[in-house]
Image (tube, rainbow, N blue to C red; front, side, top):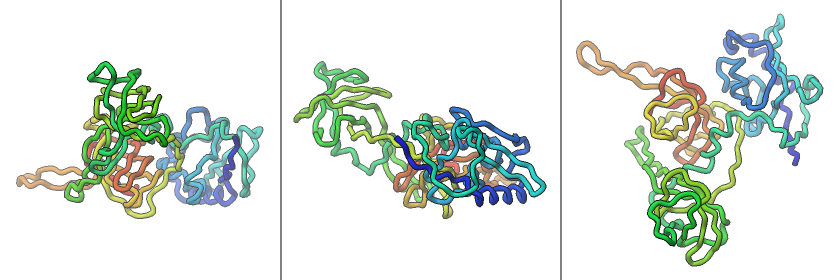
Length: 345
């Protein structure tokens, strides 16, 4: 299968990149390499981090427009990125390894690539893939009318992978693949009087329906923890990795980290966090937000004094609901904590 991919490295883009880097060398790392050849397993974020102090700004350097942010497939294994140092300034140049080491022509055109050849993703798809379809944010009692597990023929208390189970209220027109959830914790906004924004349904596993009937029969094909009678089922969505390029929000965003996957108290690079802002607050997939820690100390006279916010990391938003979002911590300079602030970088 082939797809059209817009080759974004245009003449104007490279000239803009050259002029920007020439006038603001602070964008470049002090140990910036002269060249780098792309290999399997690289990410656009990781490659940019080799050249730039702020990796999330690489779409600016390459001159992305808004539509191209949604499809940043321009770099492939074997390609080479070269830093040209000239009297006029520094310029990044992309050389296409798959085209016999041919330098990209500096003019707009459409390029056809085989989807199987694997463009470099923005961030590691394997890290966030499980979270593209779960966990699930629902309204209060949002699972109350969903199909539910009745149990097994031998009345097992705890269910797991490989068990044949029976399900009530299962529709026969939605497909055979379903996910198992249990109502979880309320997600509250600490900046809005702990207003409940939704409930995080806890993902437990998958089932495949073998027979639809008044009482349907299914097989548990995957389980992450104990599954119990009464747990609810939701149709399994197809997983599509939206490879949005990292970019800052168009408007000002201020929210907080309200939970972290795994229940840890200190959060570092690679963690999945829940943010108290979502689509209705202007967030979208691909947005990068800076994390700031709020601290206070006691003065000599015993009063608590608020200290200036300290930037401690960056998060990449990859899944968005109306009022909350899920994000990957892509950078941390010190421990990040629940209730730390997130805002425009």
